[in-house]
Amino acid sequence: MRDVTTAHPVQELDVQPTPLALLLLGRDADPRSERGVECPGDLPSPSDPDLVERARAAKEKLSEKVFVLGHHYQRDEVIQFADVTGDSFKLARDAAARPEAEYIVFCGVHFMAESADILTTADQKVVLPDLAAGCSMADMATAEQVAECWDVLTEAGVAEQVVPVSYMNSSADIKAFTGRHGGTICTSSNAKRALEWAFEQGDKVLFLPDQHLGRNTAVRDMGMTLDDCVLYNPHKPNGGLTAEELRNAKMILWRGHCSVHGRFSVESVNDVRARIPGVNVLVHPECKHEVVAAADYVGSTEYIIKALEAAPAGSKWAIGTELNLVRRLANRFAAEDKEIVFLDKTVCFCSTMNRIDLPHLVWTLESLAEGNLVNRIEVDPETEKYAKLALERMLALP
Image (cartoon, rainbow, N blue to C red; front, top):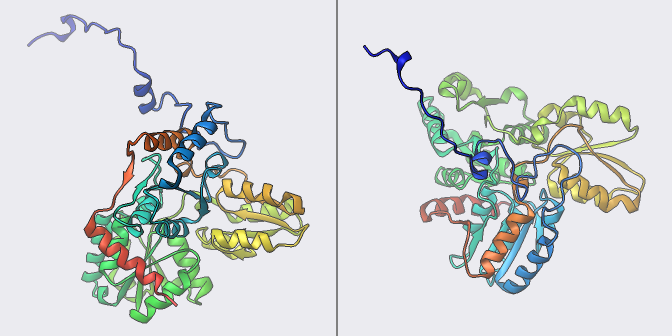
């Protein structure tokens, strides 16, 4: 046997890692992107002072050929170039209403761009400035996991009684699953209507992928109890549930959540009430049930905006939703003497949403202006067919 201790030592190569390699290894940062993960504080300025002018020039060159959508959670440097702003479904519908636009640039996350592609014409091309801009909640339910869940429901003898209701914040695959199984999509604004419709079709609902929106809507808005809800964990055998638990449940909640809204706590509510006497606590229904129960008002992003628009001068508000929107609203209503603060001290910006920064947007617009189609989001025809069916059921809700 060879004595390895006497072998010649391996010669070390004088190889310097490239900047890209360091970035992929997490040992460096790209100053032109990846600037949205900081916790509360000022977001850094664009790395190139000419970026604003370059974005403006490229957008003007494209003219009517491009339609830029900006989600409420985007940073200000991106929102300034949006033709319309809104939540995910509103933006997808806005895109569908502009068939003359050849390019739909969606400043949001992946599932939103998919929805826009589903609802727009075949001739329109939906573009996501950074393909890594995903959604942690949407990623918590894969097509394979949900298919396995349906097998579990079938084995428990309850599948025929179950109607799937999927939140807009889900992948095209999950929307298609919902369409195939007679279900509908919902937003945070119409979740109650969607559940009422679903319970007219069957005895149980499989709610995907946000457990908190499903639980809050069922208990707070529809008078169910927490005992009516069970939590299906895709990482456990049979979802961690017995056949009896599935038979007794009205709401089968998927174990998913928003990484931003899920971090607000009752302690956050108590702390802000102690610091700001008379404050109104307004939170998004993606927050945990105990946070929603402790709040004064609960509603979607659009509800939050309208509530602050209607609020009297001098009122005080603590808002439990993504920080970019809260800060934008605070600046907007400061002149009306409305005090608007972020509910928590430590929750970060939505890091995936903030991947869409000005450098990515400039690159996208300039590429399109030069005739180069980049980062197109395209849903395959079969998936689109059933996902659109689920969306159309939602649009048909009274």
